[in-house]
Length: 210
Image (cartoon, rainbow, N blue to C red):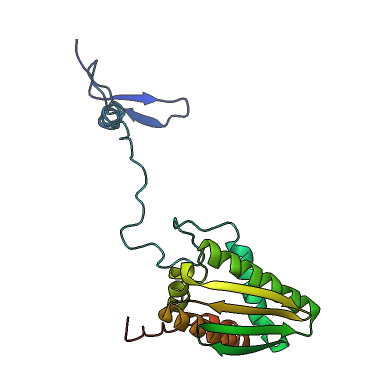
């Protein structure tokens, strides 16, 4: 069968249009490329493993209120809020420290009844933490060291009309130094507020005998 290379078709308007013909079974080049492309299937997606976590050393350094097992205790947030409240109201607080041979006696008070109530609540909470060895604010080296020796601290407290009196003692000479250093830092918190709370405080040296 003879193949025509081109046929000129004259339309009703008389405009000639050139139309190409091909051998049966042949495709035009663009159509062939499209057909070939559509016959290629994308490979199935590979399953992905679990997302990668942070590398070593990317976690937080020191916690603020962890218990013996390292987990943050349920009372931590409330205690920290109370801690900050007292720092923010330091101008309304008076505090006296009496150094004892085996520790300290402190009297912390306020003429503001609300502040006085918060002082009493704070002491109750801290006494429980010392007894149960549940650290707080241990980002500060001094606080971390105090709670590391909490089992050697005896803490007694009684409410006053405007606040609370606390007696902290120990039979361990090094722990006595920790108690006395801690009492001084708490007074700094009251004087300077949160600015002082953000600082780290030096741990006292051990007595020569130790």
